[in-house]
Image (cartoon, rainbow, N blue to C red; front, side, top):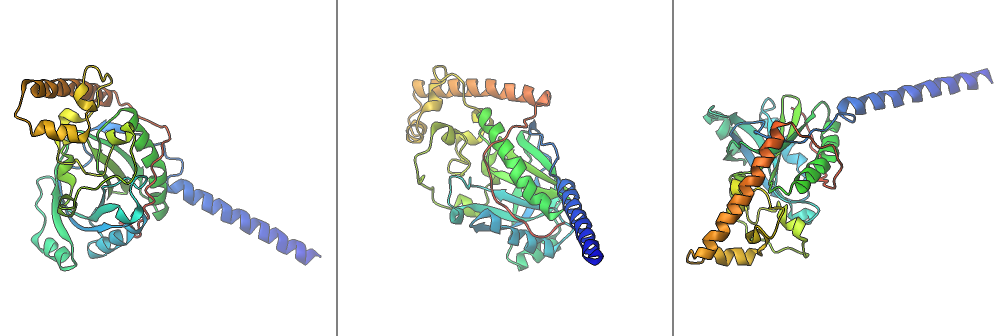
Amino acid sequence: MSEILSWSVIGFFSLALLLLTISVYVVYSGLLTQIHISTGSSPVKSITVAYKYREGPYKESGLLFTESCRIAPELPTVGVFYDDPKKVPGPKCRCAVGSILSEGDQKPSAELQELYKKFGFHIFTFPEVTHVVSSRFPYRTRLSIILGVRRVYPQLDRYIKDRKLCAHPFLEIYKSRLIYYMSPLAKQGDFYVPEVQKAPKRQPEHEESEEDRRTDITGADSHSECSSVSCLLQSHSRDTSPALSLSRSDRYHQRRGSGSDSDSGSRRSRRSSSFSSFEELQLEAEKGVTSDGLGSRHRGLVVEGEE
């Protein structure tokens, strides 16, 4: 009887120790980290990356991260995600994943470029952007990647929708034990790798709401006027900015018109209202506005391998 009791006590303490270890591990990975969303300058300067492009569920992109890390483990890694997995089927979701070869004025090593090309990677440069929506999350364990996806993206989604921002695509940068989440508010077209730029324009598989169209991140209009600072925000008054409520086909015909006075007036009205809203956004960034609400985005990205 005493032997059974002894084993029961040992089992109880072993289970308690296991649960405590798991709890500490999860908390250390970032479970209780406070999430701050803000607008401002990019956490990185212009970067030259070696990447591989793929289409498929984002949760499978971890294989590309692992492959990239094996070539040069000391380099920061980056993932660029072009589609909203809530609107685009998993097999059609597009991303580019790879390593950051250089940042800012630094030039990437020719030997390093050749090494990545040998393994089938391509070289591309993303510009420095003065205005982005961004957040960051601790990168301490592999679990940090999953927790970051589940905790940061919903708040990013809500922040962007609440402020009616035109922000796309989404980048994840793994650098210095931190995961930086960011989405540019300008020069978005410069973040689309050639494989995405050459792809035919997609037709929506279901009818989208007006709010969805305003926050579209599929990249269909990445090279249109909406990629510039002048179209970052929608006007809160449709009466004062009718050009923003036009359909894509209407805007297309306006751009192909002969430059009539009415068209010029619409563009002036649109730029005026957008710049006004953009100034409000800048003011908000200077005040350090953050968002801690919960939203609805979930990419399901699982990345294998740490820096």
